[in-house]
Amino acid sequence: MTRRFLLWLILSLAPVAVQGQVKSLTILHSNDLHAHLLPDDHGNGGFARLATAVRREKANCKACLYLNAGDIVQGTPVSTIYRGMPVYEVANLLGFDASTLGNHEFDYGWRRLQEFVRRARFPVLAANTVDDAGKTFTGKPWLIKKVGGVRVGIIGVLMGDLIPVRVSPADAGPWKVLPVVETVRRYAAEIRDRCDLIVVLGHIYDFSHPGANEVADILNQVPEVSVVVAGHNHDAYAKMLDVEGRVAVLVNFNADQLGRLDLKVDLATKKLTFAEWKKIPVTFSLPPAPDVDRLVKKWESKVSRLVDFPIGQNTVALPFRDPRERTLIERALAEQTGADIAWISSGTIRAALPAGEITARLIWNVLSYDNTMMSGRFKGSQLPPAITARYPVDPEREYTVTVAQYTAENQSAPDQFGAETGLNFPVKGKEMRDAVIEWIRKKRTIP
Ligand SMILES: [Zn+2]
Image 1 (cartoon, helix red, strand yellow):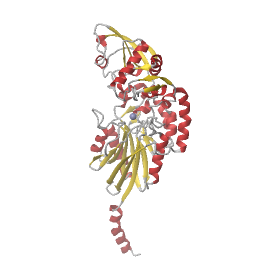
Image 2 (cartoon, protein in one colour; image 1 turned 135 degrees about the vertical axis):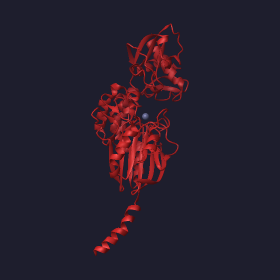
Image 3 (cartoon, rainbow, N blue to C red; image 1 turned 45 degrees about the vertical axis):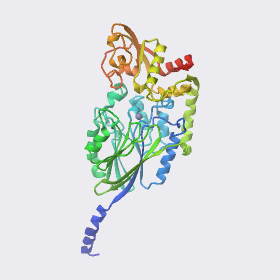
Image 4 (cartoon, rainbow, N blue to C red; image 1 turned 180 degrees about the horizontal axis):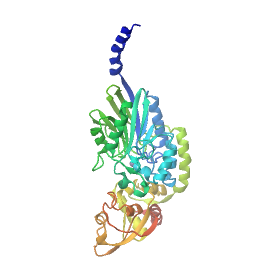
């Protein structure tokens, strides 16, 4: 070959080699699995069926990544009783290429979360959770993975107000959270040259959260990011969010759905030329993956002995987020402690209270957080609006008030009293869940 011909060859082929490179990539994704190892009452969901859905999609996909957007733990007795670890053990079989932290990963304290990260056989990305020295919580702010000829950069982030709004300073220990957009921008700049596509895996706020929309901020303000795989909102997006060809996706919580995002990536421009998204329901018609099913049963049979027994009857179905359920639980707590008022935050309640037989498991699902009751005696005038709006008081009279330990310790958090009250709750009571179970057993029929 002459030198001249070689030069011609290089000149004529080079533009083709760069311009025409459009590659396919599929991102499977889930979020907020919340320890729902078992299917729901209709037989849908569960980790074993989710695994089957993932494996089927992977089998008909040439270049595939599976990403999970946080909150693996918290929501069922197996998580509460064994402090999260069995859920990570089962999640190891799902085949995540990466996961990120959710706010609930901190529910058993930051030291326990370090144990989860060590146990995880998948990388846990946490770019904006750092200590004073700037070290990230998992040592992995991002990951670059080459799939089907596409170098995918994945940056993991948590909502910017995590501490103290979502996680108490005690559970966060030495860790703090940096602003989401700033962190994403910094790491996107750092890895841009080494990637063909940048994905943010974020347990962050979207349009459903009043006051902050970190998903939209990333799409609008960090053009290097082509895809946001989101978590925290528990309700799937009706359709893929799209800002000038940059997209965001999120599916239902509790392993109810698997997302599949099919993309075409132009390697020259590092932009998407195509994006199509669907939600795959994890229904009872999917056979459970046998290896996952075995491990789920191992743990759930231990749990079953502790929670699967009837404690009473409920005559009025109370759907999830029906305010009457909160009032009923507060009444139970007040009657058990002898307080005039019991107050819990609406987020304390995690599941519906259906009509019919009530098992202890049901109450574990409703009150999945461990929460000791704390009581104190105050004048009506001392009580914050969060209480007096729901329980009108005489400012001059004294009241005994029971709250969760979490509320007592984080009174100013927006989802608690939302104001600094200085109230001191000196009397420590029982575990809230045990109190409600005892109350129902005593009454036999509620409400
Ligand atoms: Zn969640």
